[in-house]
Length: 186
Image 1 (cartoon, rainbow, N blue to C red):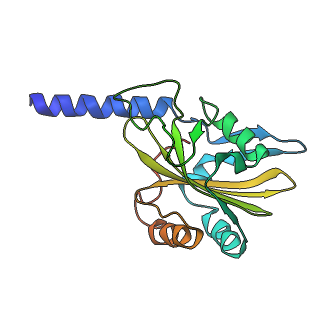
Image 2 (image 1 turned 30 degrees about the vertical axis):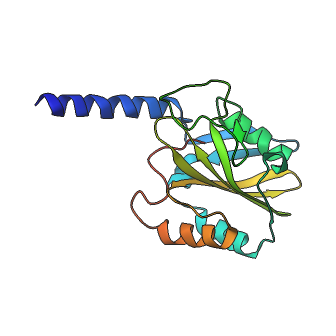
């Protein structure tokens, strides 16, 4: 009984910690230069827009990079607004905060795995540290430096090239808990 109570307490505390790191709203408005993008968390969690974004992504020509400096400024600005830490992210092979065991507030909370930029699409895959290491995928559709659609998901062992990332998303999108949990966090 004692082990059950400790396990239950750990699950509750983990849930509270996770909920404190997410945006707890169904629709969040993010103001751009000329329009306001509405982040629909329910739409993301139910993969409402995922199929159309995959189609756009498959057709998009992306310039691949492993450098966070290549994240477009308007996308970085939006991601800064969506996170408490201004979307702190390290390049591959750079130090980052991969765990909560040894905490160093000077290290970024994420590490880039893949970045692909195109005229109307951007694909970003990165590790996120904290209470366990997770891998995140961002698909961002944009026009004239304004985000028009965004989907995000979480997975394990996500590849580091466009075709394999798309294949991974397709093979996991219809699985229960396949690409996201019951919350969105970046």
